[in-house]
Structures are given as C-alpha cells and as structure tokens.
Length: 153
Image 1 (tube, helix red, strand yellow):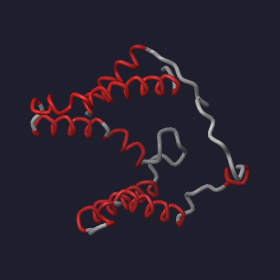
Image 2 (cartoon, rainbow, N blue to C red):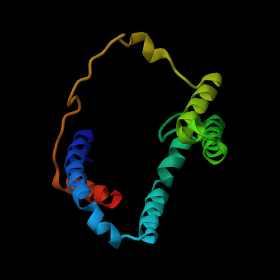
Image 3 (tube, rainbow, N blue to C red):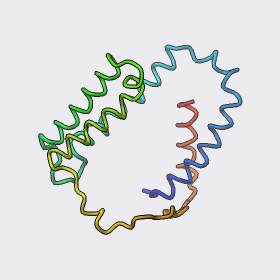
C-alpha cells in the first residue's frame, strides 16, 4: 500500500533496531533455547511457502504462470541445491544456492526462457542513483520492520 519508498524507510529504522539488538544479544540469548529459535525459524519458513510456490510457477500475472517449463526449471534448481548441500564437499556445499542459480539459468537459457532484448537499449556503464525510489517513513511500516528485525535477531 505504501510503496517501495516506505519499505526503504522501514528498513532503515529496522536496521537501527538490529544494531541496538546486537549490543544486547548475549545477555538475552539464554532466554531463547534452541526449541524456541527453531520454532521461530520454522514458522518464518512456512509463511514464505506461498511466495516461493508463486515464484516457482513463474510469477503471478505472467502469461506463462504455471507452465511446465517454469516448474521444470524450479525443480531442477531445487534438486541441484539439495544435492550440492547434502552430498557436496567444500565449495560446492558452501555455494549450493549459487550453483543452483547457475544451473537454473543455464537450463532457462537452453529452453529459450531468457530475454536479452532489454540489453539492446541498456548503456554500457551506469552510475548508481541513490534514493532513486525515494524514502518515506510510516510508523506502522517501521514498527512492523522493527519487530521483524528483532525476531530475526
């Protein structure tokens, strides 16, 4: 409802809360045994499933949403990550997500799913534009982000 400028403002406020949390994390860690921390992480992960499924299907509103090619690429990426993480050694285990992304990109490239048309009009060099999207502060967004940062801490 507020837009990306509000997200940036809320993240800025939330990051300050995370910095403050860093100073007090050791004394309060004893109040959060592994069962509590594990439950919080599990809950966060489960709440992200609908988003992940929509991305695997190709993205809401896309004409190819739910196509077999989208699902194929997503499943290959997931299998690649799981294999690298479970059976890989050294760099392949540590970089399992990156290896999965590269495998998915190469598969999407082979299937003709990558569109290079925007590169034709792109400039060779571009400088970053700070605050391109702006920054806005809304108390409700900031409080939500503070809570999220504290829970993640």
